[in-house]
Length: 242
Image (cartoon, rainbow, N blue to C red; front, side, top):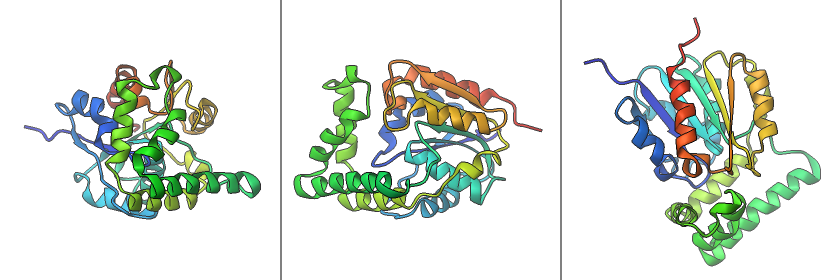
């Protein structure tokens, strides 16, 4: 029996396997699925190197959500020969902005870290996650599942991942180097990584496709799993470029 193709599912900031649970259920029969645990690695480069070392051998279909998309860019920069196809979900390419805008981001992330240290991860998540989902999902079991996921992490991992994101590269120059089938996907109502950034990426990655998911915020894999799975299924079925 031929080996199943490898599907790497990269979680975002403070996310674990639960963020990809609907996709694991949908694709585990046809793909060898791998979801990394970044631990307390404090750079996107270190996360990418970990994934490349731990993932199944051979070519990889790589899907990254949010910070996971940043890790996917680092994997592409290091080992484009391993990445057979790429999916970028609710993510971005831009570095920490200069000047006041960047300082506001830095201050906002550290304020959440201070809250986690003072009151616990669930209290932090309750504050943070309100802007991460479509408004209709506030107070629902789905929202509680997101809070549960964040609470399973550690303050140490949160601090390390914040440091990694604040030191992120400007990945814009990488976009035109991507030469594999690529899906760019975003919740229509994603306030963290809005559609305009995904349109920019899609326009610069040759042959890529754009999917905007309706009634969906940042947590698309959990909010609208049916639509996301359909887009991923089409992406996985696309022939590799010759």
